[in-house]
Image (cartoon, rainbow, N blue to C red; front, side, top):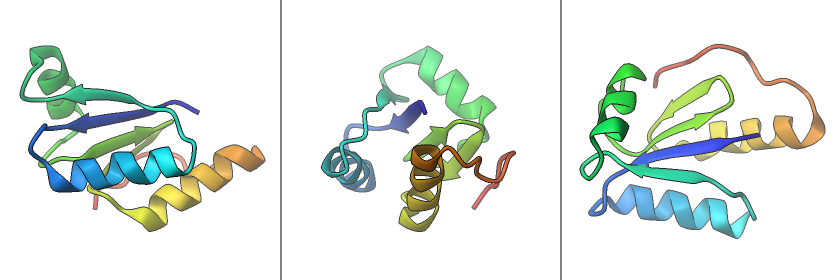
Length: 89
């Protein structure tokens, strides 16, 4: 399952999220919304209000929500679909 992060360089929650994913062996694509206009546009289209913003499959997670991340990663590793759609928190 593809994991995409929208971040900013000076964001402490973004750094914590990346460390958390790396510790679990999860690969991810990262886009800095301050350095890339394309990333900033995609971030806005996803309803981004602040960073980090995480996209896993069809799910959009606003912030570093470990509970939702664990659930989605577990669902993807077992082949069980997580709840579909987006939920903004």
